[in-house]
Length: 125
Image (tube, rainbow, N blue to C red):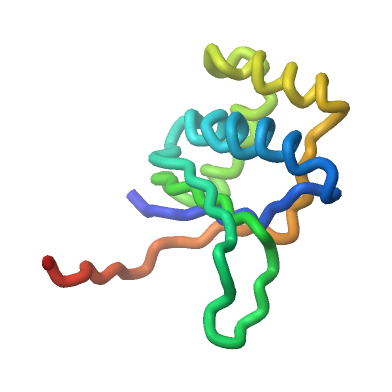
């Protein structure tokens, strides 16, 4: 079955919403989304520094590994999953956190589905 990654370039919408972003997105949303059918793993990374002279687009990168027949099918399943308030035992808490914070404390600067083409293993130490 094809292997995809869903990548999101995300950050808090305002500087004063860092704590809300970490509570809702980092501590809850990544796990919530990773529980979706077909999803293998969800991870979030914080920018530590630039590489060479490239432009850094976002302070955070979310990465979800997914196995699905197509990215369209993965997207369809994810959208259904996220609309279901009872999808798993932690969903209600995640939704309540968003309500308590007055909405989703997140700005998405870019996202997309990427199909795995090829991998190379590093040499064993």
